[in-house]
Length: 333
Image (cartoon, rainbow, N blue to C red; front, side, top):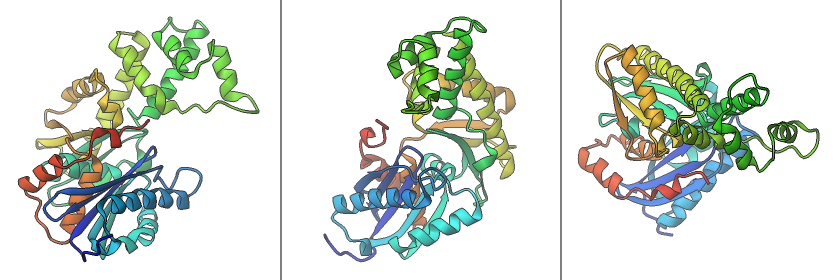
């Protein structure tokens, strides 16, 4: 490994399904990338397991870049679970050894830095969970944390879908395409068999509700009423949190960038985005939606560069986008 002192930057985005680490040089060229597991310190089995996931991603990125940690000038970590001040302190203590300058912030803020050209605005993040955050032009921040109900997160969409097929099976609601799609997904013959598999005392089948989000969007794209209702309810709730986030940092009364981030937005139908924006238009004329072209980990990279006083220019963003790893790195299998 090359031992080049303090010429490179580390950005890490850690969520419930995966952790992505990127390393770039001072010109914004990505030279290394790595992937790990869940980085949320609130998720099982333990906070130490989350730190291990981050270490795996960073270690892989360093190996691919052929660099020692001593090459890093600064590191920034955009993490689910960085919710309360003591969480940030715990994470800073665990991660500060990576670089002379480090910063830790909630993953809703990393999405803003990645997607908004000026680095401020509001995020609507729909991944395994759902959240929103906001950052004002003067640097004030707010994130949903435990206030947010995870609207539009894959887990919420999946749980709502499971509830819908139970209601349909009991004839308390009309038939829904979701029943067939979900039974095929879990490879069980009936809703009763599925409930049994999820609740039996031994050898329970993991729910992994977030994996059902794609099926909800598939069914909604085929005009299934139950799926459309789930999508509409979740999107309306998410829209309200976007408004709340903008209000919390004082930018609601002006046009503000709204960064849409997270794997659920990658569905080819774009129905989630369309439904969310329809609700937003009834609440405010000021939300200006942006599809992030780079991942939140790249936003963390930009934040790391700013720790050393570097100015984030359009050319630097362009180089970062041009050398960005392929989408396959960021897709949860």
